[in-house]
Image (cartoon, rainbow, N blue to C red; front, side, top):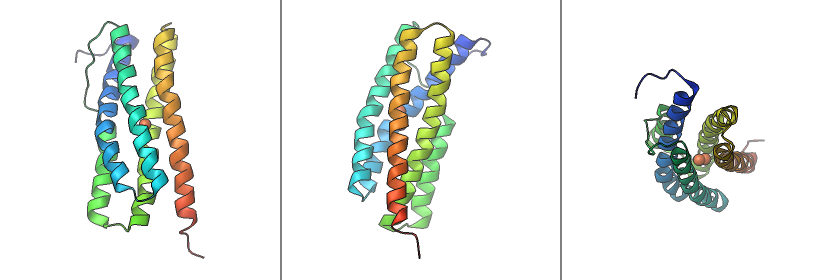
Length: 165
Ligand SMILES: [Fe+2]
Ligand SMILES: [Fe+2]
């Protein structure tokens, strides 16, 4: 991509980054839903997959609204979270309970990452006076926040019953 020298270009770069992240998550979430043994956790991943497909669609609307073709640029942040998961599963051979607990943390990491990105994108869209774009991005942000809360609650429920003593 050309040198980023303006808030508009930075906004576009960050959209492309999130477009990559969301598309990656649409491939990862079905696997997480399958990996999770806890019913509620598995269902949370499946329902977040549906929401994530909506996030991709909203980003495509935003691209169109700024007159750009949707384009993804590699997001090393989400790749790192994915790699952390893969390495843990491969090298730690976790029990089903511990895998579930790990997955709630992996989900929280991904959601925090997305929340940070969308918070910035919403603020920039508002600063640039793009209200409709800000609204689309805010929809994504709200669903990420809800998913983070779900992951946190599930973590507490799973780990709370596992702690010794
Ligand atoms: Fe998302
Ligand atoms: Fe998410």
